[in-house]
Image (cartoon, rainbow over all chains, first blue to last red; front, side):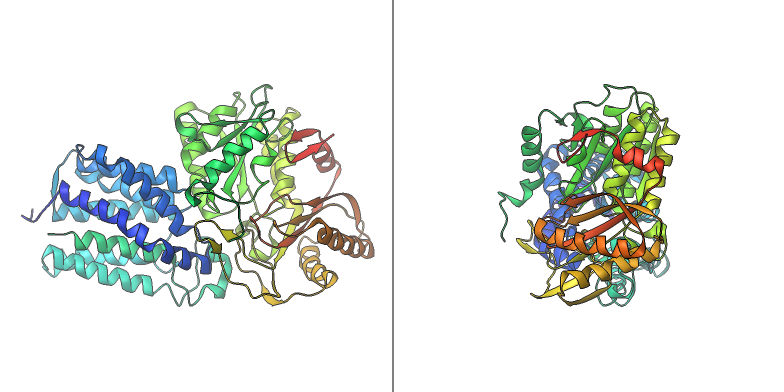
Length: 213
Length: 335
């Protein structure tokens, strides 16, 4: 048990920031996806998070898990494509380890991240090196755990490390071919382009970091 | 942007609203519950005790998928955002809407997003309603991978929809219907060429840049890069470059009989398609391959992309019977 506490208000603020982030970065994600996919990533995330934003007010009285479950369901329903099941799955599973809770400690936060990232890996059947969002999320999560539990960094410092490692993970998608998703069929022509999912994942992690007390 | 749209966020909903109004004799839009306004249902669905046939995928490929919903053809189409798979609940709702107790089959192109969402829809149909849903992925794009199971599905999926629907309407059980779908998918090959990017409404411009005067051989239905970009050449030379890999892949050989589709990706006129078809016919004749029937038109588009694709289906008596079976949908009727 740590005495570092993340409240429900923190998680609500994260969701509100994600809504803003997705609108701000929509065109950037569209550009990335146009290069090696079909250009839909930015627009679809925007459609999904607009739906989240529309309903967030009515969810605020629920516990953390229910709020994320609702947000995840909205993304799953509205986004479609691969991003819908992946990010929808992430948020639907994110609160599961802390069912019924109104605040969590940092150990629980790490469990939540693990629960969310695990469903992305399972559903996407992807591992690090496939040029997907897993290239950002898995190393970031491993770094978060190591920094907090092994190196003894303070929670926010550990999360900062995770964001940096996640960003490096996204960078690592640039020089490689894709083994999953629509870019898979491009072969060597995917080389030189950042994976859009890895970029949105890195941006999402940063929002979790920035809102931390 | 040279498109007639209102708010880019309303493109899919407004198109569906217009579609079901225009073709109200054929279809209705399911809006309640899980369908979320994304299931185009045939008015003939469940009128007959048969296996349900459900197709779907992203929008932006019209008349794929909704154009093929009607009696003798598919029972329902599930529609996603532009170039994006539909979400799981509408896939589930479609199964619930068409199942008569004989099970359903999902048919769609082999794309990661579609597979995830349709699989989740199928699981839900099984868990909550005990509906058996089988899936057949279409994989006709010869250039998209060496391995057939990794290939993406493009315009040729029309034939799989047609053959599978016929088998279901003839009273085939789920296994027989699935076998018909697999057989048709295995007998067809497609390859495309594009000369411009489609316009993405959310972007207000092209998905990707293409120099005026360039073409890309092998480009996919969403503008996925193909094998080679170069200057636009005369129609005959372009068709030659597409036919060669198609013929070599199955391979199609002397004595074969084929169904041919020359398909516009949206902006290419019928005039050009027929010039291309003429060359296809010349090549096939020289190879001793007989054309049984042909479709020349826009059957699977990429919005306003300029370009075309060619599909060959190698026929036997069974596939002929299935493809000739009567059907009546807004964008394809077989007497």
